[in-house]
Length: 134
Image (cartoon, rainbow, N blue to C red; front, side, top):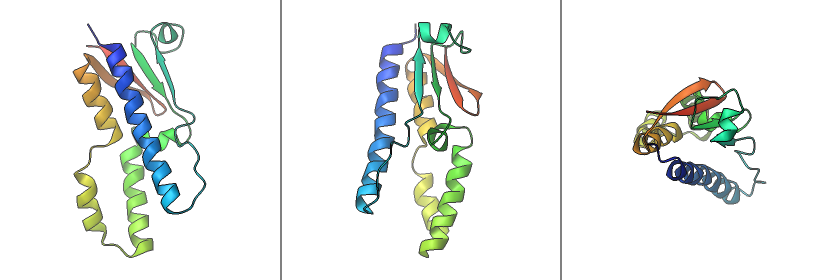
């Protein structure tokens, strides 16, 4: 039996971590902070049953800024951003890539959490991830 409540708590922790990291960067560079996940929606239980995500225990949708963090293209987009930043700031790209490779992506963290809670992660579309009972 999937542990949906535990999974949802973990998802919110991951999302809060993304927000906190974004907020910290903005504060360090004296930039105005906007919620990078303002468009992210989490559907569970009956909300999934009443949507196009029927059969899923949980669905996470994202269409704006959340796309940069959670979509199946997020890693490719991030690699491009790293390359641009390295060039702009004169940093060795290979050093940055090696350091970045040691970190789990947000999607990897979601997948591990899902597995630990008896769920299987599947991309529904480029703008949504569903989690199904194993």
